[in-house]
Length: 430
Image 1 (cartoon, rainbow, N blue to C red):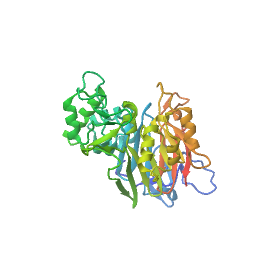
Image 2 (tube, helix red, strand yellow):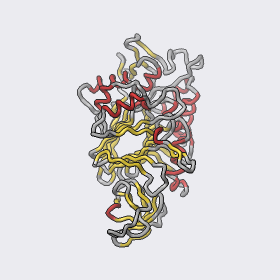
Image 3 (tube, rainbow, N blue to C red):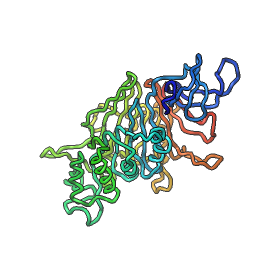
Image 4 (cartoon, helix red, strand yellow):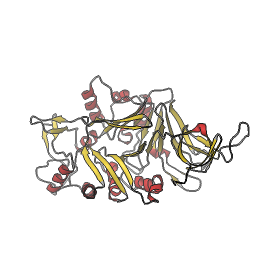
């Protein structure tokens, strides 16, 4: 984004058309490019009702009616394979929710989205990182991003549940790979957890972290000492909402989960859901983004037991109702239909990958996502199903784009065709 541009703007409508010459009524000219709402444009010429713009895809002329100073809210559900990874931009803020199991998200950040910063030798500052829980397919990909000194971070939020080696390497006081549990089978709780970097360091000093969790600790600890991370803290339903304002519009991020309990000594404890996997998944961060009149719910790897736990906590209140949701646990069959009824979105995004033994997304999860949605034609997106190979042999990763200016939502995925219209777009709310 060179400073030589006359001004910088954003597309004000979805699939805004760009023409080789200035468009006049009836000239029969076809668009050479179409860009999604919120896409950046650098203006090099101002000529009457048109701007000549440099943007994603072919450059050309765009009518000023299709241009805005407001980028709005942008969510990129990145195809990270079997895992979750979401990039969010609002105003001047950048956010990540999980980062997948591999380098896909980092490659996207450094190879496309923020090359304009890196080419100017500027740091990429991620204001908020939300790690829903510490399963490999959600957090392993963040390790290389944190280790990359071209990145700096505001606050990294996590759910506070650690991962320990399931062997003699972990401390004897731990009777599970998540730490110490207490209580009976019907009323069991996890007592081992951490909050800040100080608590994280105390757990590390005891030893026994899994290999990946140790690498994560090393990356966070080093970056904190290098002042590349401002804050590292646990989040829960008791955490204060984050409020961000841009162009006189507000985006609020609420923490709806995890919901923890307290023991008789007022120590924080987590309800045990069947086994280690269900427990760490079930206490995922649950995030609700509310931007003016629209809302998006991100649910990590919630399962039926934890969904029931959340519904019981909120009782008759229903903070889960939203316009768009990320489907729980990559489209697993382990869901509560009552929870889906409470969410009742217009669109669902499922993030999943190939070569895994769970057959995600499951047919019943896809069907239920549509059944319990609002609208005559509910949308169910899949990063895996959106992935394709072009006629030229290029792999087109299945990213799902969400764009909004606060009173509408558009969602799109990429077609195999190169241009001019590469987007398969739908109006979710208008």
